[in-house]
Structure formats: C-alpha cells, structure tokens
Length: 266
Picture 1: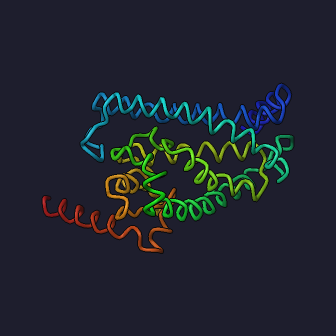
Picture 2: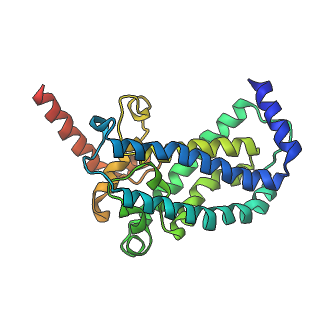
C-alpha cells in the first residue's frame, strides 16, 4: 500500500508544480469528494429510498435543490478557488511541502487528530457567534434557508461565512505546516463529515451510533429545525463543546423523550 501511494505521489510531483498541486489539485479533490458524496442524497430524497431513515418527513423541491447546486458552483469558483490560490504563499511560509519523503502514518494521524480538536473548538465559537442577532440576520441566515438539510447544503452559505468558518478548517494545518498529502486527507475527511452531518438521514450504520461524542446528521439536523435563538448544537464534528457549555440540553431532552416514547410503544 505504501509503495502504491509513493508511486502515485511520485507521478504527481513529477508532472505538476507545488502551486498546481496545492491550489488546483486541492480544489479538484474537494469538488470531486464534495459532489460525489453529496449528490446521492438528492437522489435518495427524490426517489423516496430509505425514507424510514429520513430524519424529517418534509422533502426539498427540485427547484430548491437546483438553486443550492447553482449557488455552490458560484461560491466555489468565485470564493473558494481564489482563496486557495491567495493562501498558498502563507502555507508555504508555514512549512507546507509536497516533496519526498512522505510523512509516516503516525505523523499524519497525530496531525489530523490535532486538526479535529482545533477545528471543533474554533468552529463552535464561530458558529455560536454567527447565531447572534445581527450576524444571523445578515450572514448565517443564508445557510439556514434549508430547514430540511441535504448533503450539499453543508457548504451553502454566505461568502462571509465561508471565509469566517473556513478559518476553523485551515487554522490547524496553518499551525503545523503539514505535508500536502496530510492536508488532502484532512480535507477529504472534513468534507465527508460535514456532508454526512447535513445529509438528513440517520442510518443504522451512521458513525454516530458507534463513535462516542460524534455528532452526525441527527445532532445537526436538530440545529436546522429550530429558530436561531433556541437552536443550540453548534459543534462541528465532535459534540463535547456543546456538552461542556450546555448548548445541547434541548436536543438531549428531546432525544430522551423520544426514546422513552419508543419504549412505551414496545
């Protein structure tokens, strides 16, 4: 496996410059993972497949789904791509590299764990601030246009929010100066996590059923269903920040009531 990865990486660094890999390569990888993981949930919703696992009974219209995709493409090409290109010198100055040797799996794992911890902390406070009255009305309300989220709505947001919360994703890598392959793996995991959190389905095989403190779709869907002043559940990947500061009490209470109701029925 290691030799296969090294051979593939050798081809990339031989045929493309650092700038091309870090900017264009990262952008293409992001778009591929994002749309390939998010589009199937539109199909599931339209066809009614796995409906018993759908968290909300309401469905989005094809027009609403199309609006989301159109806006996303606009934001990605006009905001995300220029931002990646503009931030390249900063990452290079902080030690990002694409050359050999490749980092060990221990180094990659340790750095990505650090990124998740940092991202959870920064995202929680940034997200909570976005739910203040003025910022919600003028910025964050764009993301909440979809009270019934589906995978692709994870990145449907005001451009200012993309910049604001995008900082949470890049601050960890900016602090460590990772190898580009570590940065790519982090980006893939982060995209898959946020798409899953917005997918609108809670399956028996959902990661939140097996991984303690992982939020997932059920946790974040609650956040989208409520008014901004009462929503809570501000966390990104892991939910310990909401637990520490008590901003998940409404969700926990509702979940307990639902579980007790299911027990009484049986």
